[in-house]
Picture 1 (cartoon, rainbow over the protein chains, first blue to last red):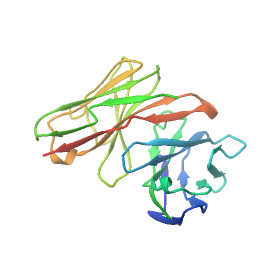
Picture 2 (cartoon, each protein chain N blue to C red):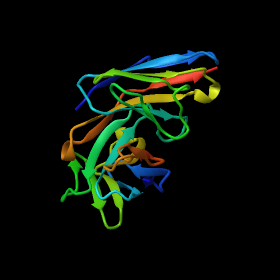
Picture 3 (cartoon, rainbow over the protein chains, first blue to last red):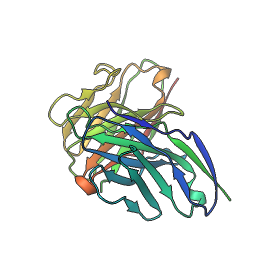
Picture 4 (spheres, chains in turn green, cyan):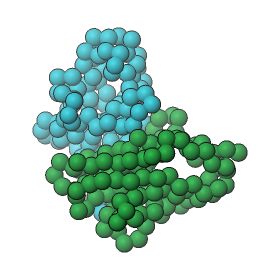
Length: 116
Length: 116
């Protein structure tokens, strides 16, 4: 079974500051993928970043980077220079590779509010 | 990448009726999924839509309540049958593209369903 834990239900961050959203996971699969999504109030799920478990380097996409610490089973999302438009729900998710685990499992999410 | 569209975007339905949601992907994809997001909650996988065979349902979801079709590699439908107010949710279609470092799972804009 796979499990994603996001321990921060809500965060308030000053505009232009960096923010780290925490995510820990548990899986028995030796190979898996980790994802972060943003869900603004409009409800759409916006893909932000992907990290494979065997990727040597931490993934980066513009202002988003994933701090992947495999031994600690953590995959924190770092947003640099936060903007007002970053206010949204953020979900961490993972997908395994073994049969039966190829589905995306989501955490409970973190609501991020950027303060001007 | 993949662009996913859903119809309808929202609907208000009477209890006891059924609604069919359509999902169209702009490219051929191997795996398509249907998720439900109840108000204030995270995403829960309903089923994996398999092309040419029956969908694979997650625990707590059954084919009689959520029949799914997938006639080809770009299209799927989800029907919410004999609706009750508890079915009021956002229903999201999703598809996987790429492999390894290019792997991504995209979501449609969602269908907001309110059952009265």
